[in-house]
Length: 615
Image 1: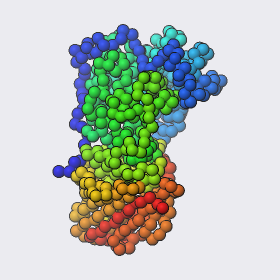
Image 2: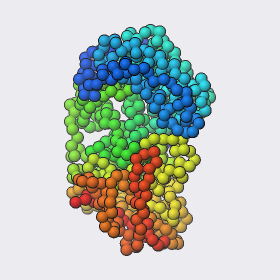
Image 3: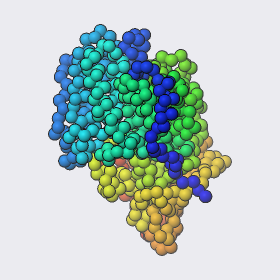
């Protein structure tokens, strides 16, 4: 029976046992603590000051010192509740947070105290602002009207505020430290206690979700509790909650480690899962290690296994085009698990980011680990195969100048799903030149509404390199899935066959996609779509150009430019076809859909597209 992509059937519920809380409490330090070297550890922060990423840290802090903090604006916050637009309200909130970070980097590098008053003023403003959550996560305006619950931003900001207390220590006013702790308790920790108890939290319940919210919010809440809660037993309770409910995030991956949310959400979700792991490992003296779980080991290898060419990744699901897994997270995983040679040195690890990630990576950079070495083309395996997720990554023998292919089966109820069963990306050089174009880059409310796949072509199968059958796009839901066995080696490469009929769900119609990949030399990929129907139906397949393209012959399309160009040869078995051209631009950079449309309906049809490096 073919494998269908399914998340691990583990969803945690309940509350931590008193016995486990007592056991964890015995491991924790007497006082609240954070992660990373504090300001008094001058050797660490002087090392940070030498990294190129920190070269402008003091200047950036001086710029913030010379100007006032951006004001909180109720009207910008309320825009989402009025019209569904979220960009301006979110930017207002994020700009205020950036001020705190820039001032912090200046003080930690310089250590003269001249930025501390502004840090204190900014921190007071932030903890007193009307809401800590994003407008898009406060549709009922509960937070705005004084009834807090916890979202991605309030959770992670509370962690950062706790980190300010940890990093600056007694440089900060003691009254402010108490006020920060009290606001974190009121706005974040107390609502989470209610959530665990199953009480009303205004419809928010990320504890029992299997996507990035679970990891991000757990990391934020737990880090905040470890940093501000005086009672060791109370801190232990939050650690136990993280241990109990953190498996839900892992349940959102297939057991082979594939992240259906896509590269961008892997960066976000797994980045904070790393922060959670690091916090718990440090606070318990290594006794509690989330990386001990075998599924986590596979999840941690996702970044390395999805890389089709150096720095090139398919933009499946909600993902910005050309986005890639964050190299620092792959590096952290390699070092923690011993799964490969270190590739990044201190210069690449030490970067101003937020007040969780930068101290964490600074700590990693200063550890006496294996010296970093650059990844060579020979480091890349010929293929990566995710059998549960039905995702195949194929790499050429000659990585330099070669053509790589990533193709997916899966189903249309994945996290941050696009209706894209059978979609693919063709890579050459430093980018994807044909296939998946990613998107959106910016959300609005309608993208998560009931018309997500009707009003947005980039989210429906229409905007992906997959067939359209009898005028229909792919259906939505778990049943809209590929049926596929394992890829089969061939004398020159690899062959994979996917039955994607269920993605369309049309009675009496079968649709297959065949993949033939030639690995030798610089590589070649042939994608063949087959139609079998009990009546004549309309049939077309699509090619997608994320960037430059041109038609160079009746059956030839050139994608990309220069030494990254790829030629696609279209073969319809002699059937007449039209090439339709459509520009799609929906909250993301424009891209081109090229429809290969058979002129006459057919009971049987075969359309092949062969991609090869352009000469």
